[in-house]
Image (cartoon, rainbow, N blue to C red; front, side, top):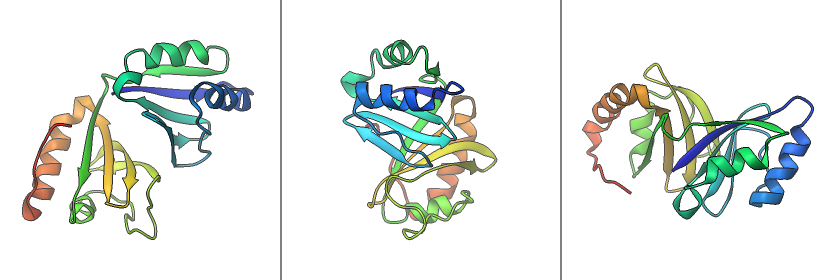
Amino acid sequence: MAAASVIARRGKADACAAAITAHYGVTLPTGPRRAASGDVVFAGVGPWRWIATAEGADAAEFVAQLRERLVFVAAVTDQSDARLVVRLRGPRVRDVLAKGVPVDLHPRAFKAGDVATTLVAHIGVQIDMLDDGPTYLIAAPRSMAGSFWSWLTASAAEFGYDVSRS
């Protein structure tokens, strides 16, 4: 997975949005939501700020292409090696997350496509709800991977869990 932070330059937000729509077929979210086209995703994390990700064949040159395409309209910073990314799913995943996430994850409050930038056990994370399964994607700083993993395994222990690579 390739990841980059994208921050629209002052006065260039509309041009940034137009360039992303033209190159990736994505209409940028204006709030804490995900917008995707194929394996390319833009997640709103603040005013005129997104985390852009690409998986599969789109990942190899994604950040370099993003920088080139947005050179005059946005600041693009490679985050690919800076983040631990895990996908969590299962019938008790909300119960596991409730042990450390100060966000209401009830289906009426946090729906598929929603994004939250928050804390988990004092660790800054981004949580994306991918589907109604529910499946969550959580990105944490790689430097905090050990602490995050300790929290996650301790929180999931009472419900049972399985770790696999995807």
